[in-house]
Length: 127
Image (cartoon, rainbow, N blue to C red; front, top):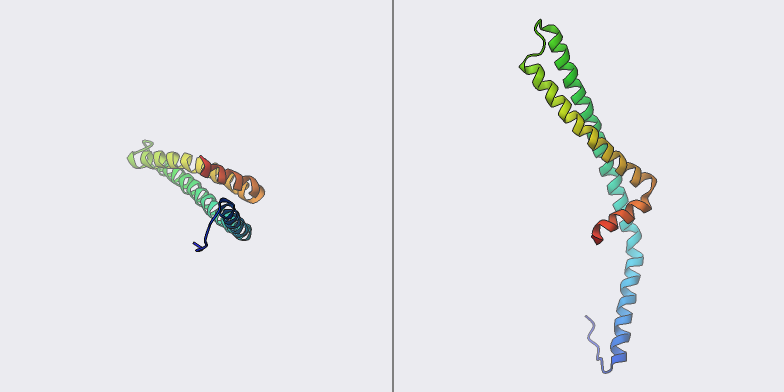
């Protein structure tokens, strides 16, 4: 902190006003690059989550199809392996679909409405 002699209340008020102005100038300079970096990070992160959820949907549908094809090869229908593969495929498939729609919402917000995304992001800090 600057070492200055503050003799009166007006000197102290002027000193505080100067410091607030300096802080405001710093924010004006640094805020746009920070917002751009935040948007870039969120774009990459939400795109990765979207790809992971699509991969999960594909893998789960493959498991269900594999279980069905295994059950067709048997004379007696579904066995333990087929039932296990089907249950795992359906459960994780449903989770992947839910995750897909959540990720899709974030991708849409970040790419198409970045200002709204920033406001929503800041609203999360204010809670």
